[in-house]
Length: 244
Image (cartoon, rainbow, N blue to C red; front, side):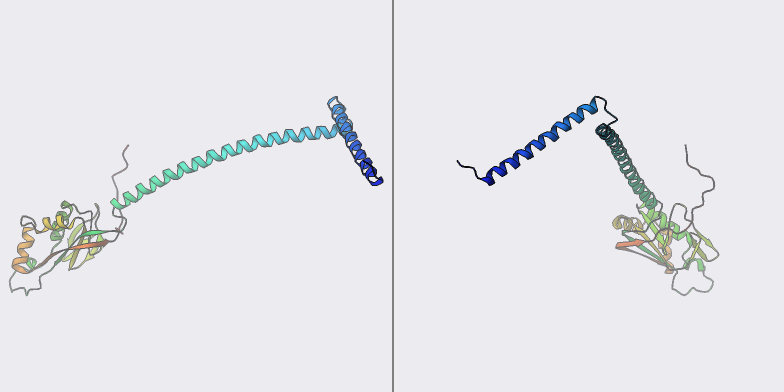
């Protein structure tokens, strides 16, 4: 095989590059050895110290990053736990508001209509026999509660455990709000059970007798979907306080 001038030139160039690279490696190993031997005053020694210092700082940063990641995980876990507790509290608050009549509700039930008689009152007759009174409303409401009603309103006044039904002169007051006939008593519950109680001859005897004799209005009808408003009044608690 014959070598040309160009081939020999390329070979010499490769040899020169190889020798240069070997020389550089040799110098690098010598520099590293001198640095390890304590030649810190030389530029190569200072370079090695800088590298070692950067490596130490990098290790510190890695440890700091790991600690921060652990703290972040703990805080995320705490936030998740707090969110779960908050969700439980929100569900319980919504339930208590529902029980306290503080939220609108809807469902099946009945509407009871009570109204004064439309008949002409004869001279000398007792006019009270032809009128609906506050005790009529109380009797119907109490019977509806007994029948398992879950929410009751009279002319859109939602009833609560604090509600009162009383008479001032000829005016009926519910939740300190003046109402006038006709009185629509809306009650959410089981319509069949509610009607069984309301139509039972042993219940509301006096009201039903006045309906028969004097024409006072007493009507009951079931409704597939009633909507009752929330209680809008105030709660006055003067003596009770949370127990231990």
